[in-house]
Every structure is written in C-alpha cells, then in structure tokens.
Image 1: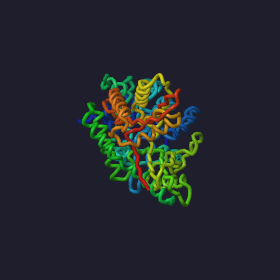
Image 2: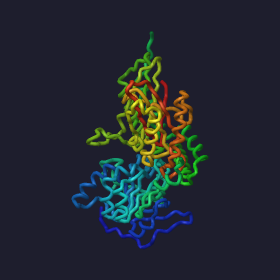
Image 3: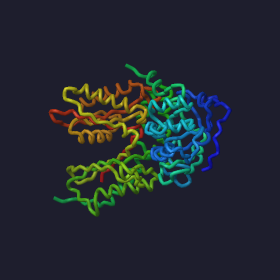
Image 4: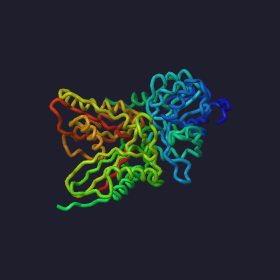
Length: 201
Length: 282
C-alpha cells in the first residue's frame, strides 16, 4: 500500500438543499470542526473498514511506532464486517458494528490523524476526549440496515489482513453514504441530546 | 408402541432453509411493529430510522441478502417427540450441517470463532447453540434464531432476593434497557426469564423471544407486567438507534418458572430490531 501523504482539503464542507452535509475524505481539522452532533452527513469517496480483529493487529504496530497498512491521516474508519457478496454484486450487507468495542484502540488512531469513525452505540470518555483533542468525529450509521447501506458502496477492495475474512481491512468507495454525527469535537453527544428531548416521566 | 423415523437429512435440509429464510425475511409481526411505531413515534429522526428499517426488510427479502450483515450465532431449540427415532446420524451433526449449508450457500456471514481465546473463524458459522428437549408425540419441532452479537453482548443476569420482589424485577429489566441503550440497535425486543435456576432463567429468556411480537402473554399477571414494562421502557427516550424518541422497545416478553425459596433469578436477553427467527415441525 503506497503511503502518499493525506492532504486535508481547504474546501469547507458544503450543506445540500436538503440540509445534509456532504463530506469527502480526507478531512482537515477545520472541516471536522464544522461537524456537529445531530448533523446528517453524506459521505462520498473512500472509507476504510476495520473492526475488532484488525484493530487488534494495528495496536502493536502503533505501540511500536511502526507504519500501519493504511495511512489514516484525514481518513474515516467504518466499523463493519460485511456479509459475502453474491455473484455480480459489489458487496453483501454492510451495516455498522458496535463502536464501543474499539474504544481501547481509537484514541491512539485519532492521535495519528484519523478524522472520523463510523459505528453505532456509545463511546468511552477517553474517545470523546480524543475527539476534542485531535479535532475528529464519531458518526453513526443505522445499525441493522445492512442491506440498504450496501446500495451506497460502489467498490470494495481488501487492503490488509485478508486472512481475517469479514474482519479484513477493506477500502470502500462510497457514494452518498448516509451517517449522522453522534459525538463531535465540541463535546456534543446526539445520544444524550436525544434522551433529554424525549424522556418522559 | 410404534416409533416414527426421521432421517437426519430432513433435519439438515430444514435447518438450512430456516437459517436462510430467517436472515432474508423478517417475520410479519416485526413489520407490523414498524408500522405501529411509525404511527406513534414523535421523533423525526426516529421515524426516518423506522422507515429505513422497513425499506431494509423489503430489500433483504427481494434481493435475498441478509437484513443485517451480522447474521448471528444460530440458536436452535429442538423439541424432539419421544416417539421419534432420529436415523442416519447424530441430531447435533445434522443441525450443524444445516447451518453450514445455509450460511455458505446463502451468502451469510461467518461470525463464529472456534475458541473464545484464539478467535480463529470457523468459516461456516458453525457450531450452533443447540437446546434439545424431549416432548410427548412423534414430531420434531425446530426453532432457529439468528442471534446478533451486538445485542447479545448487552444481555444480563441478576439474582435478586425474594424481598426485592416484583418491583426489583421491574427495575432490573428497565436497567437492562438503559444499559443496552443505542449499542444494542433499538428498537429492542426483550426476552426475560424469571425463576428457575441460573441456567433455567437464561434459557427462558431466549425461549420468550419466539412468541409473536404484539401478542398478549397467556398469563394475565405476566401480561400486565409486560405492558407496564414496555410503556416504561418507551418513556426512557432512547428511541430508534438511540437518536432519541418513543420507540425504544417493540416488545418485552416474560416467561416464569418455579424457583427456590431463597432465589429470584432474572435473565434478560436483549434482541435488536433484526429479530430473526423461523420454525418448522417435521
């Protein structure tokens, strides 16, 4: 995998007429800062998949200061392990897995320049602190909507750890992939806001 | 007395079909639950999630692709009639062969590792978790559930004291909904096993999930409790996907069993909206 330096775009994120923000990685600090908890986002471009087993292999590399198989600077990691594609299809179902299981690894990845993660479910305080410190976001895709989400994936390529099967690191090319910002770098938290707004006695 | 013979190949074929159908075709009771929630949900984001989940179910059904990429660990309840003789091999092997065929031929994800420690994927989603039970009669009833990991990870057990009583049970179930939160992919379906022993309560909590969502509990006391718990769970505000809203759970199903004078065990299986199960009688 070539390690060309990622360059954050100078163009700030634009918002469509439908109120949805259009995002194309790599993201700069300034772009990440414009994303707020509750924002609906459409991602076009590249996402990298990684979940439990792949993170387990990245950790010793990070601890030893060695290069990772993907250059995470400015990029977004999607926590998912797709189901196999039927012949003629790009990918099978491809919804998010629980983000919290990656909490042990995530602050370190953000410190290396990762700008976003996509999963579902809550994150730990150290992850939220890392978002603030490194200007990054945690976004949610709809858990369990794996079939619908496959529509937005145009190309899939395994880039590392093929032996891990569904847990390999894949490079996805996506078009209009729908997510919502859960935690932003300003302390915003969609899950907390939602409960505050809708909890009843 | 005569016995009826059932060949293992019939069991394998049945399990294969159930695994595939469970992952492609969400049960009609769940689709009705989406529609009911769309009528009552106040949150715009929550409504949008529910609509997307309906679309997802339709797409999974028509394209024969799994509703969720986590196609689960197969949990299989098999009620074997006492007058049935299984021929041609072992019941366990027959069920696992069905899982293997269903998952590989059906383009379903292999999500099982051979050991909790070395975590090497078995490659075909075997083995299943199998709960056989001997029952009267000459039939075999097979119930298959594709149990997702994200929600299963939020399942919990607690041994209450008899003094904590029904109020303690209610608080514990609601605590389980709170801690499952957005992680377990709400709207949830909860199976709650109350009574028995440690393992009996856990088994009941899984069995309870097979009842039709939206149907009343045949026990009027448990039915009242279910309705109260569901109402209170949906006042927590977690909502679809945890984005805030009124639909945190579609159903809470209770099953109870006699227990020891010292015990009040309560097991809660958390199930997500991808509540995939099918059954057949041979």
